[in-house]
Length: 237
Length: 237
Image 1 (cartoon, helix red, strand yellow):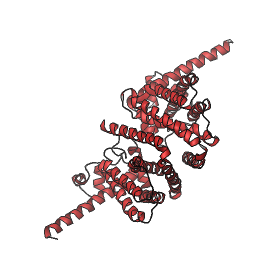
Image 2: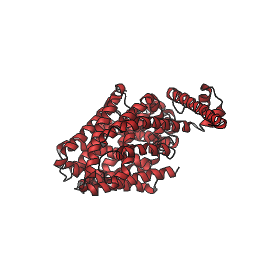
Image 3: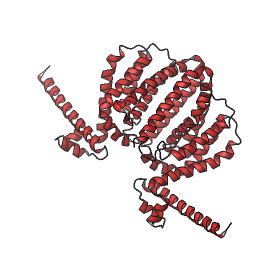
Image 4: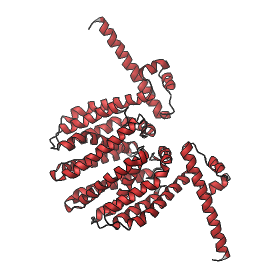
C-alpha cells in the first residue's frame, strides 16, 4: 500500500467512524423523542459535530433511516449466509432467515415503534415500499431469492419469478406484527414465524402442483396488478 | 300518538338534526384541516352551537368518527340488502356488496386520507380493529355473514365460522387500497375488486374441498392466533 493509499484509507476509516457516530446518536434520539421531533441540528449537537459536517454525511433525516435500514440488512445478511449453508429444505432455510431477522432487529424494538408512525404512511419515503427504499428492498429480496435457490424444492418458473418478492412482503408482515408485539422477548412473533413458515411451505408445495396452474397464474397476475399500482402511486409523487 | 309522545318525538327529531349537523360540520373540517388539527371547540363554533351542546351529542372527536363509521355502514347496508335479493351465487353476492361499499364511501375519499394518518395506528381507538370500533365491526361482519348465508355455496363448518370475519378483513384491505388510489373515479379499486372477488371465490371452493381439510384447519388456527394477539394488545391498553 502506498503512502497515498494509506492516507486515503485512514481518511475513509475516520469518515466511517463519524458516519456511525451520527447514526447511533440519531437512532438513540429518535427512540427517545420520536422521529418527527428530532432535528438534524439537535443530532449534530449531541454528537459534538458541526451541522455542516453532519449534513455532509446525511443530507436529511430520511437518509439516516435509509442508512439504518441498510445497516440492519447487512447485519441480517452476515448472520444468515453461514446459517443457510447448513440447511437444505425451503422450510428450514426460510425459518432460519426469519428467526435471524427478528434477532437482528430486536435491539431496535422501541425505535421501530417510533419510526412506524412515520413509515407506515404509504406516501412517506421511509415506507418500505417507496422508491427511496428500493435499494435496500432489492438487497433484501435478493436474500430471499438465495433462500429459495439453495433449497431442493421444485417450484414452477412463474411462481419462482415472484416468490422472492412475495417472501419479502411476508417478512414485512411479520415485522409489522413484531412492532406491535409486547409479549415477553417477542415470543409471540417467534411463534407466528414458526406457524406461518410451516403454512407457507405447504402452500408453496400446493401452488406448485400442475393442477393448480390456472389459479396460480391468476394469483400471480394479482401480484403484478398490486405492484403496478404501488409503482404508479410512487411515480405520482 | 299522545301529546307527550308527539313532544318527545319532535324533541328526538330535533336532536337527530343537531347530531347530523355536528357530524357534517366535523367531517368537512377534518377533510379541510386534518383530524388532529380540528378541535371540538372549532366544530361547535362553525355549527353555531355551544361547546356544551356539541359535547352532549359527541363526548369526544373519537365519537364523531365512530358515528361516521356507523352511518357509512347503515348506508352500505341499506344499499346492499335489496341488491342481494337478486343474486344467488357467492361470487355475485360478494361482488355486489363490495362495489356498493366503494360507492358508499366514494364521497369521503379525501376525508378518508386525512383520517388514515390517525386510524392506521393500531393503538388508535379509531383503528378498525380496536375495541372502540367493535360495534360497527360486528355489524359489518354480520353483513358478510348474510352474503354467505344467502348463497348456494357448500362451505364446511369450520371455514363457515370464520369466513364472515375473513371477508371483512379482505374488505378492509380493499378500503386501504382505495384510500391510496388516485386513478380516475377509482377505476383501479373496482378492477381490483373484480379480480380479487373472482380469486377469492375460487380459493373458497378449493379450501372447501375435503382433501384440503388439514391445510384449511392449520390456516384457520393461524387466523385464531392473529385475532387473539390483536385482542390481547387491545386489552393491554
